[in-house]
Image 1 (cartoon, rainbow, N blue to C red):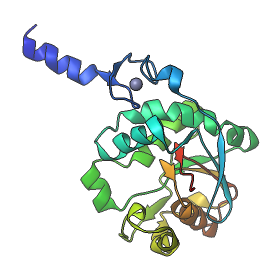
Image 2 (cartoon, protein in one colour):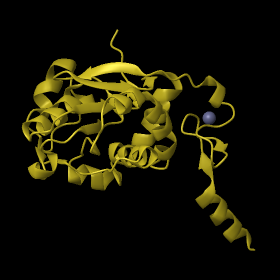
Image 3 (cartoon, rainbow, N blue to C red):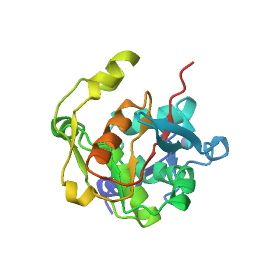
Length: 216
Ligand SMILES: [Zn+2]
């Protein structure tokens, strides 16, 4: 086998740790150095409007690094690894409720195209496979607002107001839905998505994210 093909194959199959980006075993969820450091909890939060959710990590240290690399550095493959702690975090929600669908916080199509993927959708789809609940696109973002991380805390609520709409209300009506995002900061984005589902007649609406930001 030529050197070129060996290099090509190893670049295709090399698995990298989401927490430190070093090479790791294909089946593990973190490398041998990071694995003992990972401390996950089901951290309870409430998205704007009072929707219950859980995150396995606080947005700090290696967890913040993982989410940033996943979101901004073209690492969609981290999703499969990060969906595992997400699944543990939402365990209580899965035991309390029977969800009809898992969905995600949608991106504005032009921005999703530019990034190449919506990290929240990847997580939602991987979680859906792990817990055997169908994934469905239920809401869309039809207004392009400035990114939430560019707004201060006070602006965040008005910035997301009315930017989402239901794709098909009939699919949502009476359904129990778990909404996934990568991170919860002010809770305004997730809250607005949940409100959109509620207005379309959803029954139970809960949330899950990888990280939760703690304001100090
Ligand atoms: Zn690592």
